[in-house]
Image (cartoon, rainbow, N blue to C red; front, top):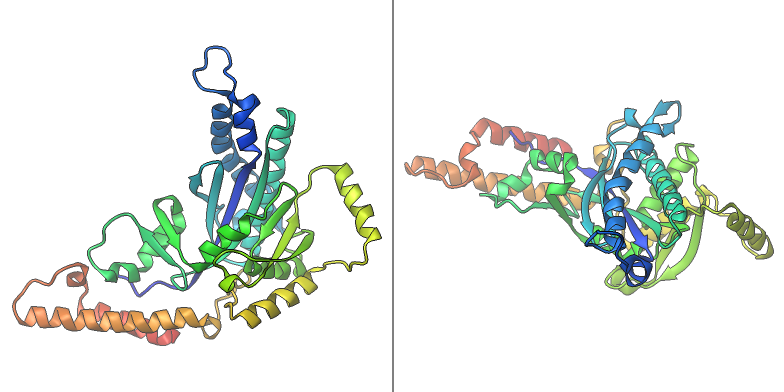
Length: 349
């Protein structure tokens, strides 16, 4: 039986086909041979089919330290598709696992971009990523009607969402802000949310991931941070060697300083503290989460969960004493299970 859902951090990755609208209205709108569909339909189908395969293939090839990424956790799974965009999700298990997920995804962007280049450069791919904490301040929901709120306090529900995100939806402020940040992605810039950039800077310092950070100032994101300007931080995904050379020479002309991971980490940390953004909690491989460091929103969630369990237990007891059949899932929770759940929550608090 459930002891209440534990804290978890999920990574969300977005890949979008850039230039798809122009392609549909141009060369992609043509018919070929006896195919009843225009060319762009086949291109989108190929994207849906092949890009997830590339993510998995590259994830399995990524090395973090002296070990394979697969040793640290599972590959990101497709969460949903929205038009010309594919979204992936993975529950993060460690900094090393994060490094493997990002490394595999960036490699897939590079590979599929080259495939598009070879087919005529009509379209390109652009990527973005963000993290969100569950079960608070973000929530997991399913389209299946549940008989009681107790079900939403079950670890089993969150575990199933970790394994098969396609059957669930994820809602909350971090999800909303992630979609807003992703709009700043370009083919040569993988955009990371402030929380993800902070985690990646730490992973980079520990040599778990290799990446070049970029900073593009602050921009107002509708509905995010009460529309105070939000930092746009990127990872370099430029494929063209000649363009990389041009950028390198251009940067040498500008009065800028290099963006190393320590500067990114310090800036992101200070910005989140100033804006009241909770730091995402992620341990190193083999380490246990420090319960005292879990975010305040999660601790408040556990207090509410404890009260809900108490009220359900009292209601069920009153119904049993009255000789009535209790309604909903709470009828299946014996007193010893309720006490076990309460003890577990008290340990965390």
